[in-house]
Amino acid sequence: MEVAARLHPGTMSRGRWALRGGFVLAGLGGLLAAYHYGSDLANVSVPVAKARQANLVISVDARGVVEDTQPVLMIAPEGARPILAAIAAPDQSVHKGDVVAEFEDQGLERGTSPTLRAPVDGVVRVLPNPERTAGGSGAVFQPGDAVFPGMPMLQIDRKLGTSVLLELEDVDRAQVSVNQTATVRLDALADATFAGRVKSVSAFAGPDHRFAVRVSIEGADARLRPGMLASVAIAVRTIPHQLLIPARAVFSSDGEPVVFLQRGHEFEPHTIVPGLRNDVEMAVVQGLREGDLVAIENPSDKVHRR
Image 1 (cartoon, rainbow, N blue to C red):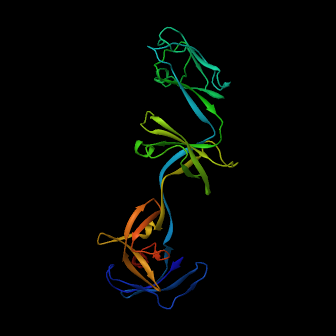
Image 2: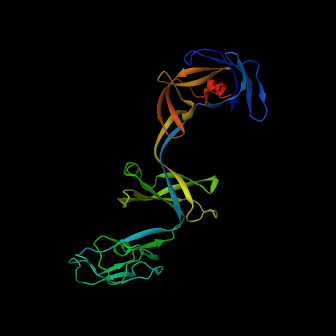
C-alpha cells in the first residue's frame, strides 16, 4: 500500500504529515497528494505496512551448494602409521558390509580390524592423499601408502534425495540441530522457495574451522540440479504471538526508535519500544497496536530525494 501526504515544517519529533485532497492512484491501490516542504510542492507517495500479530522466526542464514548425494566419510584406523594394502576403485558401487580398504597388520593398534567396510550402500569416492598432493598432483590414496590414524581416506556417496551442503561458523553451528526447518532459495530459480529440514550437523570442524551442515530439500522438483548455489535460512527459534512490523519501518530520532504512524490522513513520528528482530521483521513491545499503519520510508526523505 502507498499513501502520500502533505509535509508541514517542523522537527522530526514534532512534525506532522497531513493529506490534502488525495485521490486514488490507479494500479497502486493508494492515495496521492502534495507534500509541502518549505516553499517546495512535490507529489510523492509513501509505502506503508500494517502491524500484525504473528510468530517471530529467528534464523541462521548461510550460502550453500545443491547436492544429490549424502556422503559418509571413512577414516584410517588407529595405529603408528598403518600401511594401506588395498582400496576400492573410484566410482565403484558397494553394498553395506563390503570391504572398501585393507591394511597390513604391522603398525595397527592391537584389537583394530585390518579392514574397513562400507557402512551403507553407495558409490566410492577415494580422497586425495595430502602427502601426494603437496606437489599439486592431486593423487588419491593408493596401496602402499602409510596413513595417519583418523585421516579421511574415502567416502561413500548415498543418493538420498536433493540437499544443500552448508558450512557454518562455530557460533551459528551451536544454534543448529537436526530436524529444524529451513527455507531454501536458489540463485537460478529466483521465483521459487523450497521447504527444507536439517538432516545432519557435523561435530567436527573442517580445515577452515567451519562445520558442515546438510539441509534436505523436501519435495521433488525437476528444475533442481547439483551445483546450484542456494541461500538457506534455518529456523533456530520461534517466538509466538508477537506484534510485527518491517524492520525497515523503524527509524532513529535523537537516539530513540521511532516509526511514522499514519493517523487518518496524516503521518506523525511515534516512539516505540522494540523487541527482538530478524533480518526482515521487528517485534514491537510497546507503542503500536495490531492494524496500525506505519511508513516503511521516511516521508521527509522522499521530499529531499525529489
